[in-house]
Length: 151
Image (cartoon, rainbow, N blue to C red; front, top):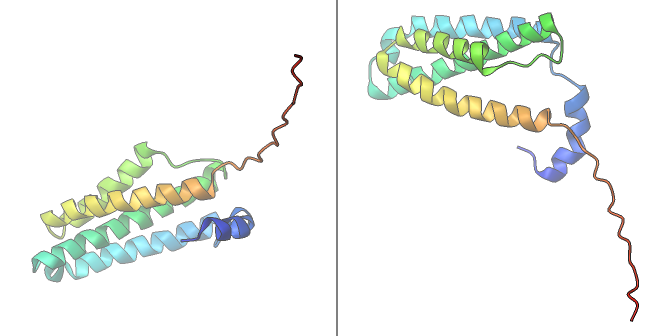
């Protein structure tokens, strides 16, 4: 996490360079979504074996939520253009329901922890998106007019 000095110095990188094009990022995030879901199903008995492992199952479920939301957002960006925004309903809610359902296939406690971890994740995703995509404004200098008072 960058300080305001570093953010100002490197802000031109964030506005011009993307890590991957939208469609490539969609394919990558979709692959990670499928792999995460498959891993949750493969280790279902291990994740449901103890209290701490169910919390880990919820954490993995929230990671599934982040990957799925990234895939959906990048697909929409590829299909509808760069100015399209992912909204709370239906995209975020649908991805959250899918991730919670996948966590529910492991253990019912995983659903609750998946929801809690996903809320933390969506808060930080929103915070990062707001700082990266915030409109930049150039402050205009204030002109002060001094007048003499007559006595």
